Image 1 (cartoon, helix red, strand yellow):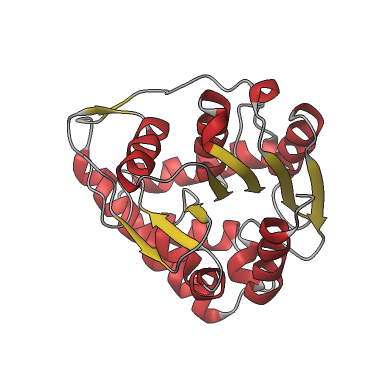
Image 2 (tube, rainbow, N blue to C red; image 1 turned 90 degrees about the vertical axis):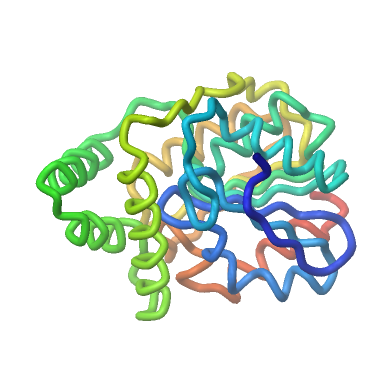
Length: 251
């Protein structure tokens, strides 16, 4: 199965990978500006947006590789947020020649969870076990958007997260997701920018520091104003940061 996706514009390809609280619609503010000089590819990972969950075995990195192969794109730049960042790291590590640039925004990675993440997970699990999907959705909106997010951004995240819950809960235990390729940070050859949010959970700031210290040549910038989804909180500033990174020949 090829992931649901869309493409816009022409030029060097850039793939946008969404966070686990979202789907490809999270990149709405960046899509048109980036498409002025790039072929912009957005996709929904399985269980999000318009990509269903089935009983077939899959891993997210393999799905992304299959999508890029079907589009004939090589190499690509990848801009990825949160859970999408982990997928991007797998792709860039397993197939380094496939990825020219790698921008990781509050990326997920396998570091021990901090207390703040554990608290969030316990609260979300309790709400879902009680059947309070609306409550779990609101918890996610409150947790993953920083103080600069406006009402439109909050409504979009609310819509995307509720869609993900509906799809994933409907699938139940009939999901055969595999872990996918192991991540070897030293194997990544892409020009890499790690972005973290000063208002995000401390777990993701720790991850950013770890990634910047272990990916060869990686740079790290922290946005003091940003929560977990800066591209929705201050869209213009984040778009400018993405554009500068993609267009700067120094990476």
